[in-house]
Image (tube, rainbow, N blue to C red; front, side, top):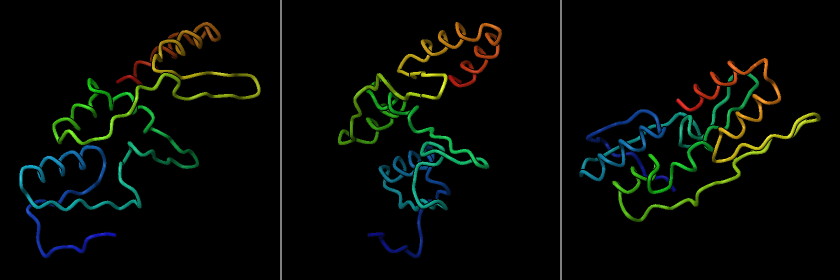
Length: 136
């Protein structure tokens, strides 16, 4: 059940992406009254995935391994309090199967990169650029 809006807040944050949620949690923990506004029916921003034209991009999977003690999300959760959920490290993240391919994306994307370079040696430089940009 949603709490009713108050007549005023110390801080209003537009967007409940990972940045907005983190800022809201830290400011609230510091004692400020915080309101986070989100236009979508769910929180998470790009972390929860997004659509571009007819394509849906599932981006949340990239954050699962960041929830461990040394991951970005895990470090932020630890700052906010000790009662956060802990996700087990993911080994097999996603499998892509088609008529002529079967690829497994794991916690080590270098394995998939090596597979693609082996299968498509003429695309080696493009594949390397793709994985470099994805890691960034």
